[in-house]
Image (cartoon, rainbow, N blue to C red; front, side, top):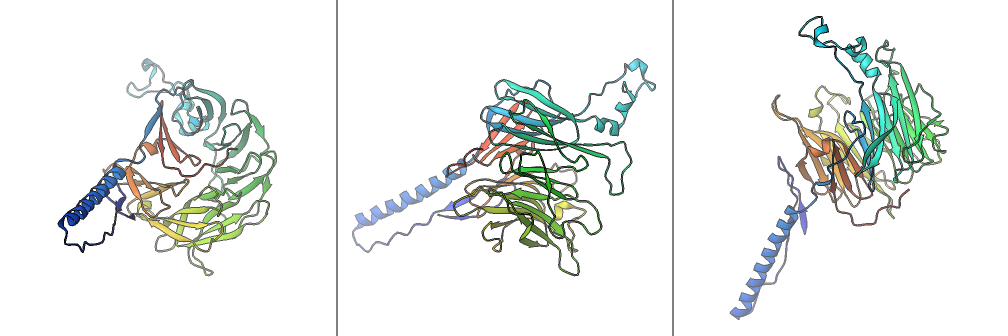
Length: 455
């Protein structure tokens, strides 16, 4: 069976084309000729049935639970994680704003808050909190951690027992500093019992954290603005500052974030960043890798005229593992910024950990789409998240999920608003979860090999 690629505005169905070679009859016997015609008809009908079966099956969203309850409902679900029947969630919550009785308003038609700070956006943001909930699908969630903050990163073990959370707090009422940052305070919290009890870890509070990536409960990285990269080998008790790869620091001195990072199944940290055109070379994105137990980043790949926005890796196999980079094509000037991001085509590239020189482009997405997310699963599963902004100004944006189950050879595109609620992808089971209010749904994709052992 040979698969071909077909894209439509609403759904991109991959159709199979069956080709069968049947020898022509050389007999003059009409009964034998009629028998062969019947055989041809059976094969043709079988091919049609196979196509219809393929197009009518495939993954569909299924409701796992419609009765997930919260002891203190947050303003939005935030990030969440499923481990068996247990569910954990990290959310933000804004302070409660109350109003004076109408009779106390200075202007009868203008409502007034009960306290002055409630009328200030900066003061309200300063009072935002980060909240960790845990519980079960059938008994609801309880809050076990609350701390002031507007920025967070979260890592958890596969079994949901070990958690590290960084919480960054910014003072939105202070004067901006020279590099356009406001006062910052970052703290790291750790739990060894599934999030029921927490302890604060040592961390330089002036450094924020964008990503926490761990290969196990002891060995991992914290990546933050600057950029900065720190490594721990004792579960976050201490952190070692790692020297950055070439051109990671912007020559102007402006601090920046590493937009795309990934920790491979072998413990290799990879970071991607854009390098503007200069006398030494054209515009490009570079990917550098830091092998475990080494102190220096080494070059991995170069993607000319692209800005990488996501890095992802497959699980390890006997032959290694594959890496994928979701990128935006640079504008004509080679810059990684553009007034209209929707006009920058998205591209997906891949290579392997053992042969980084053999990088190839898997897919170029329609320029009208805004690509913004990537999940990579087992057995060739690729999930790209995008938005179709529409043609007219008043057209509502259409959320899309573009999927492949054969490592990018064929693709299927669906309008799917569910994935834009709050999502979590389980690479071990090729399952995508979505949580909105009290309803948890899942979308399961085929898996052919046994998943990796749990932490």
